[in-house]
Every structure is written in structure tokens, then in C-alpha cells.
Image 1: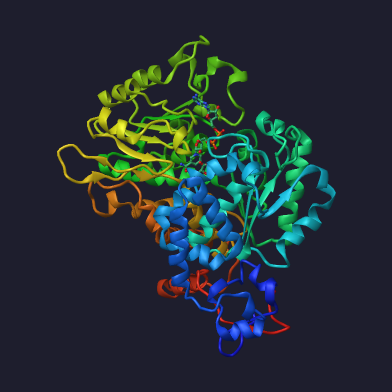
Image 2: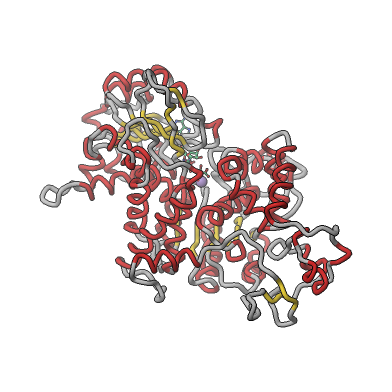
Length: 580
Ligand SMILES: NC(=O)c1ccc[n+]([C@@H]2O[C@H](COP(=O)([O-])OP(=O)(O)OC[C@H]3O[C@@H](n4cnc5c(N)ncnc54)[C@H](O)[C@@H]3O)[C@@H](O)[C@H]2O)c1
Ligand SMILES: O=C(O)C[C@H](O)C(=O)O
Ligand SMILES: [Mn+2]
């Protein structure tokens, strides 16, 4: 950006234009000199505040909002007024505000999007405007070279299903976390919703629904729509990371496979969730002093997240095996029992009940489970399989019942149980119950935040790891952005996951009573470490296009740090040639 010799930022905006621009607005923090130059004198109260004073005032206002949803809407208003203040506030109260701008509260904001709607954000694309998509896309890019686009079609938002155009809320929330946890400049990030209709009857019937009021586009028409959008990203933003979020299960995997070799494309629900879960599992097996290849893993809910986790863990098992007796995909797959809404996924269920994306190696055989079509529920499976690991990605609240958990604990000294469904109300179990039913033996991680639980016989509490992809996707993305990678390779993702596991308190402190993942309050530090590992893997894979990356570790860290956007004010000087 154009600067003066004194390091001041040259801007062209004046008066209401600068006050109404969240990127440049400073509100009561404009200096006297700036007020004179930019025509703001009479438009602001007299006192000149510091950013710290503004944060203090904003925090008081935040606190005065009684419910979480009111706090969420207060923060989204602030985001549309002043980015620096918004991110400074969020950074200072990170742990307190994460659940307000992200899961679980953001789920409530999204499900009520049409009623809460006040101000638009990001880019909304819908089928009737198909012919003007390029114009609208370029308009939203505002002539900038973007680092990041987060896109959702709103079909499978968290565990709350089809939310139509409200899906923009998850794109925005994910982009906010990229800024908070990975220093992505918000002016170089764009949230997009592909508003291709909705099959949510409540939305279709709601007179106030703000989206495109038609059934979802499917088949070739849907593919053409997505293809046009991805084509525009490739054409106009060739160096930008394209992050897919909360697409329906039938599209998520297919789109990832279609585009991942063409551009730097990443699916968070599949790859981000796989990577964070692998990290938590690495920490858990360090506690149990076992190996990945020793585990019997039941995955309950085999959609985008469940299958993404299964594939990621399977790849890790293959990598872990010795070269002389290398496990193959078939052998590694035999450690998994996948379940979905018809129970265990086994051959005799028939094609109708087994989704196309589920590879044959993951489908259990007739030799083991018989040729009948009866469904095997979770308790049956746990009884027969005696799993060491149970992962929930089903959106089925309370599915991990006392019977199931006690049965599992009969055969596993330290049962590893990860109920990962979000938001909180969709979680498969409350960690407090898991802890009680297993006499404190369960090693736990959840998708949304929960309070620590008691450890029997000890004073200290067990911190339940928040196994949410937000602990890793900002770092995976930053690594790709810093290296300007032409694609996101599997080894970039595995390297990020390994780095995250190394930072888990259970591993760092070598203490089985410590958490399986770093604290969310450390998300910025952790994601930075992940990003460096990902960048190095991109270089190794020869997909990095950035040439200025320093080779020595210290230089690299400084260089990467210097690229990070910070919530701090610039001093401005009016200049007709400046930025706007
Ligand atoms: N912790 C994380 O980082 C993280 C990441 C991604 C997704 N998730 C959560 O995982 C859940 C699933 O997300 P997704 O993107 O995979 O959605 P999805 O729609 O792709 O998958 C959900 C799967 O669960 C199955 N299912 C539904 N009801 C079931 C039941 N009663 N028993 C067994 N299976 C059932 C569905 O058939 C589907 O295959 C959501 O709650 C989401 O919030 C968590
Ligand atoms: O958004 C989250 O909180 C994690 C994950 O992407 C999800 O869909 O639940
Ligand atoms: Mn998601």
C-alpha cells in the first residue's frame, strides 16, 4: 500500500466515506491531524481515544448484551464498522469470544439468518444471475489480489443441515478465524455463498427468507454453476487459496477430487477435520503407549467429516508401517468400522444404503457380518468389535449412551472417545458423562468447547481437547498462502497434522492427564507452527511458487511473521493518489 516517508498510509477517502469503510475507519481514534485532513472534525466527539480505550469500551458494551446471540450480533455489527477494533477485541478475549463468533453460537445466527439480517457481507451468487457471475465476482474482488476465498453452498452447515443463503455465515466465520489465528489480511479474504436454492421447507415457507427461494439446483446445472465459479477463481485469482466449507456430502468429496489438482483447493470438513483428528489421536496413543496400527476404530457418522477422518487415519497407518512390511490400503482399512444412519456399513446392506463415496475396502464383509439386511446398531458393533477408538461425526446428539460407553470401557484400558459433532446440541455425548461412565479413564476430545472434568483421586481437572478443525485449517491455509502453492498436497496436510500433535500438552509434558490438543487460546501460535511445516512440505513437493522464502529457520520465521496482518491502526495522510 502507498506510504509516505514517515510510514503513514496514503488514503483518498474523506468524511463519511472513511467513517463508513470498516477497513480504514478508526472512529474515536482518528488523530486531530487526521480529522483536519480527512474532513472529520465535526463528525466525531472531541476526545481522541487509543485502540486500547476503544477495546475497553467495546468490551463493556459486549458484556451488557445478555444472550450469546445478542453478543454475536453485536460483534458482527462491529465488524461492519471497524475491522481493527473488531479484531483487537477478539484477539484480547479470544477464548471467551471464539464460541460466540464460531461454533456453537454462529450456528444459531445462521439458522436465524433471514430474521437477524441487517447488512450484507461477502459475495452472494445465485442461478438467475448466472450470466453476470464474472461481473459480480470482479466487483467483490475490488481490484485486489486475494489470498483467500471461503465458499459454502449452505447444504450441510455444521450439524444443522441445509441453511440456504444463511451459509454465508459459515464462510464469514471461517474467514474471521483465518485472520485471528493466521493473520490473513481481511481485505484479502472473501466470503462467498453459492446460493443455489434450499431444500429446507421452513426457509422456503418463510416470507422473510432472504435467499433464492427455489429447490436446490442438482445434477449438471449444479456442476456448471460451481464450475463457472471455480473457473473465475482460477482466472482472476490464480494464487488464491479456495476453501470449501459445509457442502453436502454428495458434492463435497466429488468437488474436492475434481478441483484439487487444478488449483490450491482445500475442503475443511474432509481434510481439516481429518488432520486435527489425526493429531488428537496421535496424542492419545502416546498416552496409551500404543501404535496407530494397534487401534480398532469405529467411526459413527460417515459423511464428509467421518470419511475424511477415516481416510486421513488410514493414510497415517500406512505411513507409520515399516517399509519392509508396508501395510496396504486394504490392510489398513480393516482397522475401521464405519457406521451411518443404517448402522454398520456392510456389504449386505445393498447399494442403496451405501453411499458411492465409501470405498470398497471400508465396507465390512459378509463373512464377518452375515448376508442379512438387518441393521447393526452402535451397541452391537461395540460389543463385537471391542474398539479402542470411537469417533462421532453423525449429528446424532447423545448417540454415545451409557451402555455403549461402558461396553467399550470393558475392553479398553483408556477408551479414546471423540464426539465431534457441532454445535454443542448435536454432540454425541457430554464429556462429563463419558468421564463418569469410564471412571475417568476416557481420553476425550470434542468438536465444540466443553468445561474441564474431574480426574478421580486428583485435584487437577482434565481439559477436554477441542478437536475442531479451527486448530489447524488456518495454519494449513497460511502455509499454502505463504508458499503460494499451486495445490494443497496430502503431505502438506500430514505435515501440519504432525506439527500440531507435537504441540499437544499430553505429548509436550509427557503427562497422560494433560489435554490431547493445545488450548484454543494458543490457536494463533499453534497455527503459525502448522503453517511453517506446511510451507516446507509444499517446497519439498515442488508445488511452492513463492521464490523469496528465506532458507534459514530464523529468517523464515521473521519473514512469515512480517506477512501477518495485525489489528493496529496506521496513521493516515490524505493523498488523491492513495488507496481507497
Ligand atoms: N470437530 C470438527 O472439527 C468437525 C469438522 C467437520 C464436521 N464436524 C461435525 O460433524 C458432523 C457431520 O458433519 P459432516 O460435514 O460430515 O456432515 P455430513 O452430512 O456430510 O455427514 C453426516 C453423516 O452422518 C450420518 N448420520 C445422520 N444421522 C445419523 C445417525 N443417527 N447415526 C449415524 N449416522 C448418522 C449421515 O447419513 C451422514 O452420512 C456435524 O455435526 C459437524 O458439525 C465437526
Ligand atoms: O465449523 C466448525 O465448527 C467445525 C466444522 O467445520 C463443522 O462443520 O462442524
Ligand atoms: Mn464445517
